[in-house]
Every structure is written in C-alpha cells, then in structure tokens.
Image 1 (cartoon, one colour):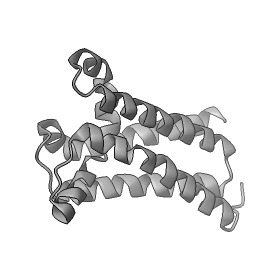
Image 2: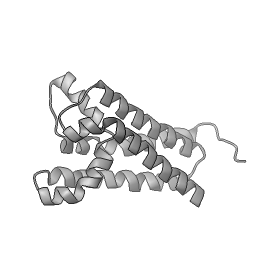
Image 3: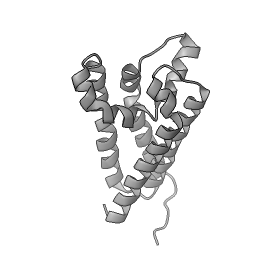
Length: 154
C-alpha cells in the first residue's frame, strides 16, 4: 500500500473516531446515561466506515482488507480481554485506551437494548457483543464495492 493511501486510512480512522468520541464522551464517561442522540452518533460512525470500505472495495485495494482485519481484530481481541477482566482494576487500567477507542464510538448502540427489552447492558459486554459488527460490516461493504462498477484510475 502506498504511503498516501496509508495516510488517508489513518487520518480517516483518527478523525471519525475522535468525532464520534467527542459527541458521545459525556454519556460514555458517565457509563449510565444514553439516549437517541448517542444511537444516531453510533449509526453515523458505522455508516462512515461502511462508505469508506465501499470506496476501497470499489478501487479494489486488497491491502485495505488487511487493515480491516488488523484494526477490527484488535477490537475483537481487546473486547474479549476487557470483558474477561472487567472486575480487575489493574488490567482494566492498561486496557483503558482500547476501551475508550473502540467502545466510545459504538456506545450509542446500548440504547437499542433498553427500549426493546428493558435490558441494561454494561459497557464491557456491549463492546464484546458489538466488536464483530465493525469487521463484518466493513467486509460486506468492501465486497459490495468490489462487485460494483469499476472506477477508472487516473
């Protein structure tokens, strides 16, 4: 993958995650408050990833698939550790950056569980449930993009 493409992907990842965290930080930090605004922010975050993946699939950059595996794979592995060691404060302190980075943007999906089933789900369990969502949806949109009409490279 060329340096320009790596820069674009890195910049997108940082910007979209920071924006999603900024809009949801107060509720995520409190850990108990959530509303439809958080849900909309999480949907927009995921839609941005889907469109981004569709684009990279459309230009058929196979290296982007590797990025998806690594990026969302870290999410899945860290979510397992966060969930497994939810009561261990020492391990949680080391996992805090990953907890914030991956858990914050998708925090709004917590809103789905309460109105539908009146279930209050803790954030480590939410991250564990939603961790495959990013990887799966990015792969599906990448695949859809690669199957669509090819963009001419200039």
